[in-house]
Image 1 (cartoon, rainbow, N blue to C red):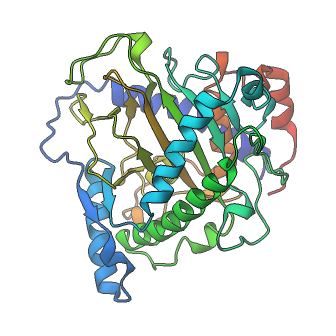
Image 2 (image 1 turned 30 degrees about the vertical axis):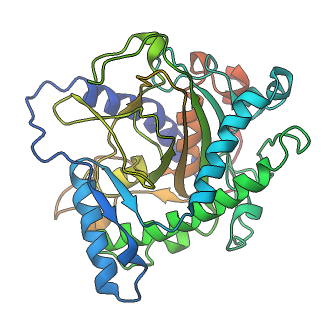
Length: 383
């Protein structure tokens, strides 16, 4: 990757993403929400051997991606035991680990944004956020395919960057995480094939880009609000924002949550839609890479989290990415004759890392040290 390409990726991650968010949040042109919906898509036909059946599901995904950018999926194959298990681990991590044990896993010790985040350490949109987080990422042991042995981290390094609690501190934690992660990674690869079909591409188009994919997951805890908010998505006070308005960075997100609602989606009109997934469903949303690949045809829709009730909310987003050494640039099939891309090519891992760095206190990056971040930028990447 040349110095120019690296500079472009950093600029797009910081300035381009911020400009897109501002544009969506401050749009002045009157727009109706007539076509806005978050459909429920039964993906069981997508496991059929008949491509025609798989294409039917892909067509439903295309419609959702070109309107709201969000949809629910049912009959996805992830067992209830795995889903309940990972939500239980989120609760255990937040409440059974002591402060000293969490401090050993603090994300300030990671160059990759992994580990434990207290609520004051990061802010995704500059808001005061009431959340607590544990982040972990892909490792070969959790990939049921065994991987291809070529995984690289966001910064191009190859060492395992995950920081796990000690087994004696949280018995069974890692095994439960591994079970869930392996299943949702399989599901994400399956969905990516449907995304390919939805774009008129060969079903296996993205396969070579996901042999050692990025896949950051988070265990999130949103404490009960100090005062219950009304069910309408009125503007919450600062101290009640769980996660500020943002778009996701990667290809798409698979979100599992407890029964306590919280996700709110920005509609074209600028009003907020409170998402209420059906039982046993995942919420899926388009992220920045798919928006860039499709030149804006697929919507990386702005969303936020507000816990409006008196109960704790737990959620587990899985941010599915391509291999971090992949160059993301607009698909030729998504450009009309003579049309230019709205976005410049970016390197996947570099882009995500810089977006993550921008969320840390004062935007200085992990370790909280501008000099460290600047030094990292000068290191020649291994891809």
